[in-house]
Length: 372
Image 1 (cartoon, rainbow, N blue to C red):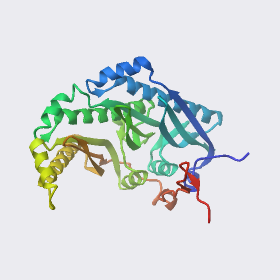
Image 2 (cartoon, rainbow, N blue to C red):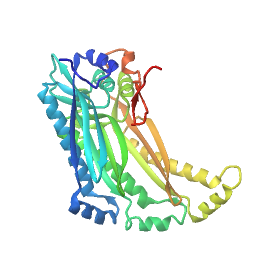
Image 3 (spheres, rainbow, N blue to C red):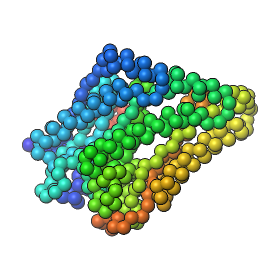
């Protein structure tokens, strides 16, 4: 019978270059409810701010159950691995469905054991060609709240201008906590790296959840200490391949957040000036200072790791409310390491071409793009 796969033509081409062929689409899901006790405990913890362990664990368990069911389905298909794994979270009348979807791949010769990988199969090709053999799709999450009690001191400080360290600490702590859990899973799976990390922040009722996903991998050219402390990277597959071809290896994914307050007086002046045309100096300096603080933290952490550069730095800024601005910087620290390189001299174009969607929005969310 014909196989039904979620892999695109470009993905299949790239996998064929690594002697992998497409298999069946596999799905795993789990519909969960927090339950009365879990919700009550989460509500109490929410008053204090920071992580809400009950919610973190409930989300992790739901994802893990769905992931394991997808793997079990692939095992029944006698697959060598699952490529292009994606995870989703959907709410249904108070309950949440955790969904994992991927496509089986088969190999005539494969000595690495069964594997799963996050991201596209095009990215997987880049990882493999750079020496990063896939082990498992890995994820780390944390559910957190700004809190009422924990944010009280910070709320008072919003009357003055400057960084609100209490808020910055909450955001920095929670995001690094998710990264630590991701690394912990990779370590448990005997991987020495997590590549292709993607970070998503999702609303969860009155909370937020941050989840980081990537592919736990093994690269034999990384130093032995990486077995105990796997390296992490949020570079795209193409970027990782390019840096590997130049002899560089990732050291660590670096993140820094600064929550900055315009202050009561500054806010009043900015609001007044916004009525007239021209630069609002208070907002200009506010955003500049917040950016400088976040980037300086990344520089200091990179220096402590003896990294040579921090690449692919992305910056995000948003207004939190009440005169508060959040600035976040994220990038990957790298350094040159002996033995790093790529198997191919150049990437095939099929590994770099972005897939084009063939569905167009319609009355039910999607409809086929028919020729008129």
